[in-house]
Image (cartoon, rainbow, N blue to C red):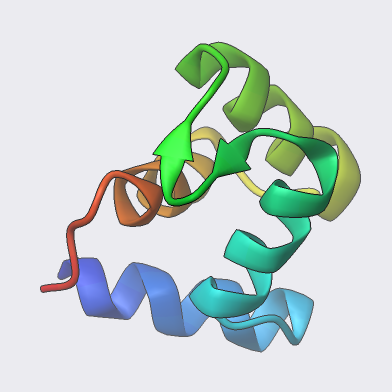
Length: 70
């Protein structure tokens, strides 16, 4: 599955785009000025708990936070 397919599946499941997740992570203090302020595990666990994402999909959002776009 391509990275974009992961992002598309996440948006179909949650109704949220990767940019929406960035805004939500900023509100939680996980991102400040684009920099990640917590460990990957904390972000992945948040995405799994609050949005019912699987581990791979949660990691795709974390990877997006790190700057991957393709």
